[in-house]
Length: 160
Image 1 (cartoon, one colour):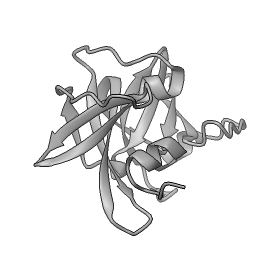
Image 2: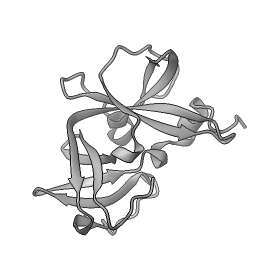
Image 3: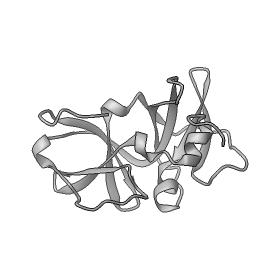
């Protein structure tokens, strides 16, 4: 989701290994505690499972596993961040992102945003850097986190 460059960006902060990331609140539906998930056999390692959200199954992706190949730990600060995604046919679905070290929301001022000046085509979800209270937060674009395999799991593109 695009942010007005003249207004503060509110974001949920989480950790992947020793690094801190921020997901814009505008990209969120809800933040949930870690729930028991139904395991999905023969899916990629970054698929944490399925959860029941208001009577509908929702795929949950483990952000740690997707980004660094190491799964999230089931600790007190592990949460499931629900974000909307849109299928090719225009139908909106919900995706769960399991993340560790969710510590709340922050207000990121526009003047603190910087480019990393590095482009990684394998990680198009990495956005601007935010200098916030002495640490560097990297903005995550949830819509760009999805890989081809994930899009197929969510039925966002057809099988070819």
